[in-house]
Image (cartoon, rainbow, N blue to C red):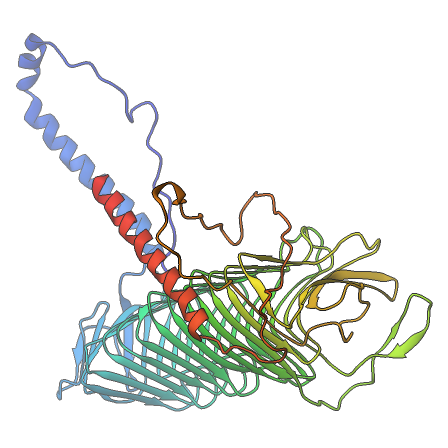
Length: 565
């Protein structure tokens, strides 16, 4: 990874100091010795430049110090007689229909491939770039359109102790039968129209730094034991790419930082978690499908973040499904003092969130205590389509739905917001703006309050009736519900003085803005209870089409503004 350096500050006594221009007589006198002074200045400047360069070079990746191809080590430029590979003695290694053993290097290495290339290794990484004596590791892989690079190993297939960059129109196939398919000790960036397929016995794609997938082709990451895609920092997907991730025994995607998908498609299938982002999930004009099946202890969450928020906006379509003894399609939780998080914001989008119960068979039956001190067994499982929960967060749990169609189902409850506190004054809330509850008939936001083991739980759910409920399993709680913007009637030709300006949209997660509580009102012609509109039907498509038109208009306005500037 290229080291960061700071440009040395100039001496304040010389940098930027104004020097008065000499008069005409003095200029004539100075002219006689000007060439000698200029020469000395040129030499001095050159020496200074060389000195600064020599100081900076050790922290920058410039070239490989050596390479190994098929087990043979080279310290100077080399190639094979067949012309399947060549190294220029610096940072460029070219492959042309190469079929052989491992490739290793110290420092920076650019692997440029054309044709059909196969790299195979056992008990050693197929492609491995490590830190050199004077320079950091950096691996750059780029291929021509129609070319492929297939890398297979019993160890990591592609490994760098520094950054990895995969670019170009060619396809990269990485397979590890024992460890990770692609493993970056620093950041990992995938860009270009080519496809990347990574299949690992451990992780499919792994990075200790950030992972960025930008303007790419199809990226597929599969794992047997660990994560399909795993990063110790942030995962960013943008630029129209398509990403698929899966794991047979673990989360499909885990980011110890945040996950942001913008103008991209994400399709994941994991065990226990579909997506687990520790520091927030943002889906902006994204098409997302997430599946999570029960894990070792019976739990399953499709989209989950801890200590931060889930934000779905700008014409995103999300289909989330989880199945376990305890399950949720959307879930955010915050139980640390003075930490933000525990909120779900959905605006101008179409969301389908379903949580189902499946038998696990492990563990004792849970018991709870009521306000009179009596204990009783709790119903088996807790399966909620959309849930936000806080304990000590800065702001209590909030689920906000603005101008969106949301279909939610759960064998326990469709949607639930709850906050926990010692005094019972903190309340989780559900807020609906520019939309209405279509099912169940007569559905509305109802209040929940319970004292459990000395801690108050207070919040809201979608249901029927006026009484405050004390259990999410209460029959008044809706197990399925649909929220959607009201149908827009065909307008008559308005008179000139009746024309009103369009209502401006609000940011789904305003910063510093005071939130107003909005009461959800059921439509008079509600659909029959239990009949759910599928994600992407006529009304949902209309929402997305409207948002896309607005997005295009915004983009056109931005370009026009830039031209005027």
